[in-house]
Length: 271
Image (tube, rainbow, N blue to C red; front, side):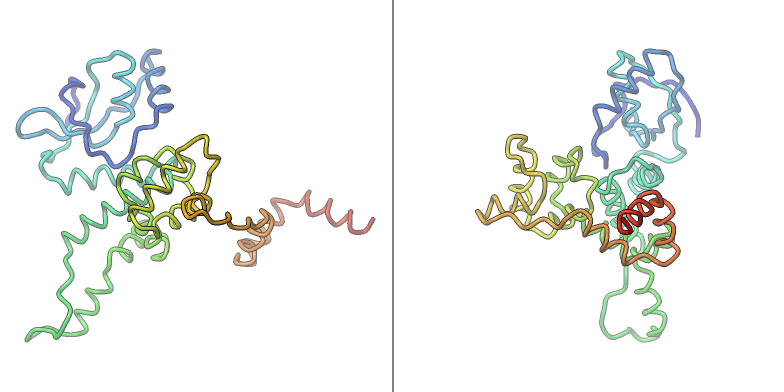
């Protein structure tokens, strides 16, 4: 990569996987105005002129909000018209960020899946052609995106599959809810993903209506269908269900973390 100062007006920031968070943009603008040094953004050169943004959407917006017209950038050694390379640079950067919401992560993984499957097409199902070995085919089918991603990220395949299901939410709805609390709640997002696209839009409208008092997919569905809202399980019951699925070592770690509360409870039983 080479580093240089470029004009912000020449940067194409369209089609990003993540929505900008206004609070982050404002915080970065304050840093810029204070003279703080920020890491350079990353861009790729467009053949027709200008730059495609790879990494640093919030930094670009923060500089603009601070009234800056130029920004320091590292220029990638591949062209902006190399779609797979540009997307994978954005995806990899996103996936290592701790502040990703569940929805952000799901969208990044879904785009990675699209690129992966375009570059690693599975053979057509059916009778193997002459000279093909069934064992080799089965090996290829096992090398699915879920398995590859699970190995790369050190998570379970089921975790990847749930993320991909979340990313199946209608794109318009995903963008509308990107800054809503539901964006970081996997259970709610999965419930939304299992509705039709038309229903998802109606549910999102209810969730985004501040005056509706609706904060969950189940409540939104009940309001749309004019049915009673579902009974809420007590908070302790949800924790208990999760606790029962932990390994012994994890349960002991939980006990250690809540030792004071457990001791107080035991004393109250003896009283």
